[in-house]
Image (cartoon, rainbow, N blue to C red):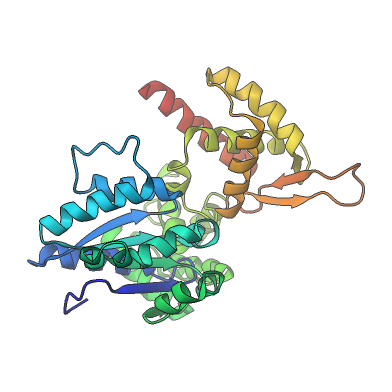
Length: 348
């Protein structure tokens, strides 16, 4: 990257909360601050989950008047690259949280990595893929896998001391002096150790602990505030990721949380979900998606870590999909989503 060599492909890999996105965003700031022909473009693939949306997000960052209607993914990408070739710019496309692309859209990864074979001038494109597991590369065809393995950066998990240092630094930036006890930082790091010393989880936990302390009119954040925050901060996804879900994903999650909070059940069936989802959509004045799309959204929410999904076993007639909420209180999730949907309704 220092020599601005085009057509370089890099894999950045590591468990959630190891600092991958933070480092990538720092790289973007550095490249944007210097006069460089290497121009970074960032796409969060946890939000833009299909190739068409990824390319549209990429193009929207430099083509304001471009209309992709009627064009294939390849045609959209080629149009954007031709524009950048004319401008003598070298794009660095950064695809963050790209795991889903590696499992469900392998042909898209293949196209991106071999872009110069379609047109030699397209060798200006460099790529950074940010993924959680390097084993995903093995699922690609041998040529693509071999190409991506040449430049791999591994992020190791943090340990307890490193996480305390990170929390110390961020607390000093975000809180008033001496408003967070040292013991609170240690408690936060200790709880986060249960989830692989996930720094993102630790920071969200500390933020929520600060909010709880504020609601209780406490001048300091105590270890108990951190413990109370734990039940409101899910370890498998962030609140910002929850906010970025589309309307039907939120409605389906609301349905799941409502059904589970109203019962003593561990799981609900797909049939129960579909029936109640239709009722909830009716209450919000929104047309429900059909069964096939409902099943697809449930599958996507499971892959993203919002819900669990398994096939029923003994004790149930026939086979059906069972859906659970393994990492957050159903009542808390229901209340959060009702507030989110209320705000969306008022904006409309």
